[in-house]
Length: 106
Image (cartoon, rainbow, N blue to C red; front, side, top):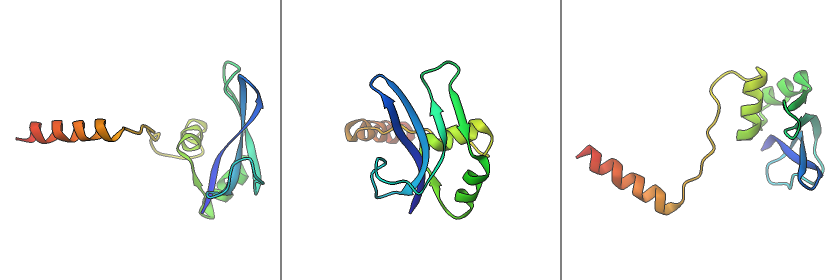
């Protein structure tokens, strides 16, 4: 499965990212199929350069954006819809939330 995701580049403590298309099973540092833009969150406001036609092409042929890339594309206006909330709860917190929900249902 193809993914549009971020590849970290830059120096220590000064991260910048490339938006790349690669196979989901491969490491982001291995060869990417195509470079789709750059994202620099260090400078304020964040600097974002996108190849919009190529991003639309890869999304049309079935490439899925990662959650962070999806949120960047929503901000840029390339993808319609809501931002994806990426929060992973531990098993302990998930069990506590489920217990609280069942207690509230009773």
